[in-house]
Length: 254
Image (cartoon, rainbow, N blue to C red; front, side, top):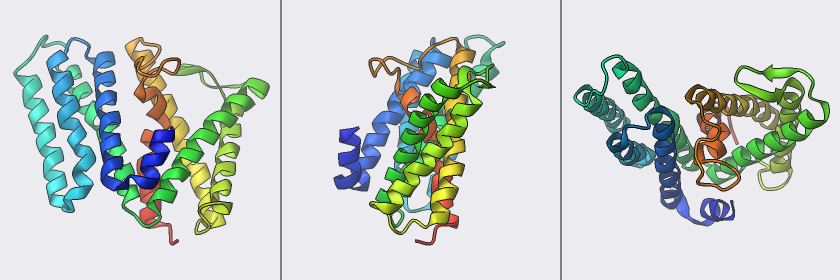
């Protein structure tokens, strides 16, 4: 976390994108190890090729970006077409491979887009505050008052009370940002982002839990001792990134 904060503050957008590229590559590898453990060659090709999406915002050309995404889709579709392991699972494997690109680098790319906006640094810290305060408040509220399960099929331990407490935590995070380093954030912006990004972040957490339970694993990886994998740490941010970026793009007036 100190390294991430330092790079966000002092490193510039390109260095920040390089950091996200490392997270993206590790996240794709984790996804493949859960979903397609036998696909070793495709795993590393996907980690390299997919991570290139992180740098698309620097192209400054929407047509080029669309072309890159299209070529990536076609390229990996052909790869799986001609490296069939079992015809019965070929469609499922192809779908997982393409989902990896959308789930990890494509969503992370929105953090680069956000960094390039006015007040981009402040917004990145707002996302971190929302996610961290949401997680902490949800944990303690759920531990103390949780009685009604939120979504037991996907995450048996999460409670409705914890989810509501998490949203109040997110509001505290956005108000902290407003009254400290981000005075341009209006009260309306603080409430709206706390609720919308807080809810979407919780959904991101649930979605990753769905993937892990479906794949039959406890953690996405072991790269962070005691905390699981990169995807376990980024699950909320992956969903929060595009929502925050489009909120800033269409609603934030500064």
